[in-house]
Length: 178
Image (cartoon, rainbow, N blue to C red; front, side):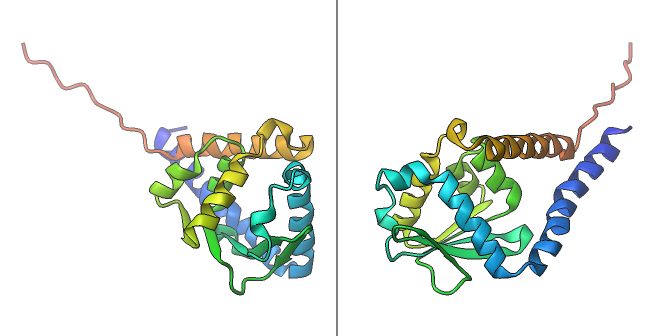
C-alpha cells in the first residue's frame, strides 16, 4: 500500500471516527450523558474529592466542549459532582476528542496544545489554571483499570493514525553526471 494512500486513510479515520461517534451521542438524552459524566468524574477524581482539593470549584462552573463530538456541558463540585447543559460557565475548555484523549493518557501536554491552538481556554484564567493543574494531578496509573486501559488503547490508535496521516516526502535520487 502506498504511503500516500495510507496517509489518506489515516486522515479520513481521524476525521470520520468522531463524526460516527458524535451522531448517536447527539441522539442520547442529556440526562443520560450527565449521569455518565458524573460517574466518570466521581471515579477519576475520587482521591482529590477525599483530600478536599476540589473546594475551588464550589459555586463555579467549568464548561467542556468536545468540538468534533458536538458534546458540551458544564461541571461543578459542591461536595458532589453536578453536570448541566451549557449556560454560563466561568471558564470554557474546548478541544477535539483526539487531543483530550492524548492529554488524559499523558501523551500530550495541555500547554503545548494550547500554544498550538488545539486547546482553547476562555474565561476566568485563574480558575482555568486551577482546573488544568487538577487534571494534571490525576496519575494515569491510578485511574480505574478499565478506564486506564481504554484511554491507553485509544491514545495508541490516535498516535499511530496521526503518524500515518503525515505526508511522507520521497526524495528521488538526482541523476549523476560524470
